[in-house]
Structure formats: C-alpha cells, structure tokens
Image (cartoon, rainbow, N blue to C red; front, side, top):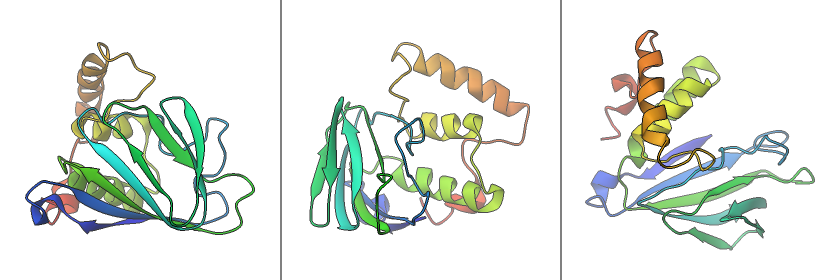
Length: 174
C-alpha cells in the first residue's frame, strides 16, 4: 500500500512524494513477469527512490541493481524502469518516492489506491487509462503507438464504468 506524503499543490508543482509499503510475502515478489509496476517511462519526470526499510531490486534503462536501506536510486526522465522485491527477501519494504515535477502524481496514486481498495484489483484497461492520464507510457509500447493505444483503450472504457479519474478518490489530491 502507499500514502501520499507531499502533494504537488503543496510544492507549487515542483514535486510530489509518495511512500510505498510492500508487505511480504508476495507483494511485488519475483521478476518472472510479475514485476509491479510494469516496465514504464516518465518522459517528463525524475523519479527518486529512497529505501527506508528492506531491500528491492530494480531495472533502469536495462541495468539491474539492488537498493538497500539508506540507498537512493534516481531514474531520469525517459528511462524505462520497474522494481520488485527479490524472492529471497526477508523483510517488508518501505520506500519513499519523489517525482519531479509533480504533474499528475497525486491524481494517479489517489485513483490507483481507490480502485485497488474498492475493486481489490486493477484490470489492464484501467491500468492503461491511469498510465495514459499520468503521461507514463509502458516501455514495451513504441512511443508512436502509445497515444493511439490510449485513445483505443479510452473508447473501450467508455463502454464500461471504467474512467480515467474518479472524483471520489481525487477531491483531496488536486
């Protein structure tokens, strides 16, 4: 789970901070297609992880690494990245994540938390819509195709009750 520690409107849009807590077993465990989140990019944001407790592994622009308490990992704009807890992890992970500039970080995390809480899962169409709204494309989708995929998924979602954003989750996030 996670909590928004500093909202963009508190920093004049300069940054937002979110803390994530990954509980073992099985929170973001494994690398065999189970990495959470999916490999993605922030074209306009720097994402900085500070490990407060535990240990996680990450990929940033094709390079794998480990992060331990006290470590800071900075992901520059445009770098494809993801992270996960290793299968041999022995303690929960607590990490502080700073995104600069804030952009729609608050809204993304507020919607993601609300959907997870109420639905217990986030289906692929919902996740793509949230990523589209946050301008954080999936790294495996060619950049020329991403806006078209966002449009297509938006059309699919319009036939359901799936939305890009939910007022009941984001009123305090903006």
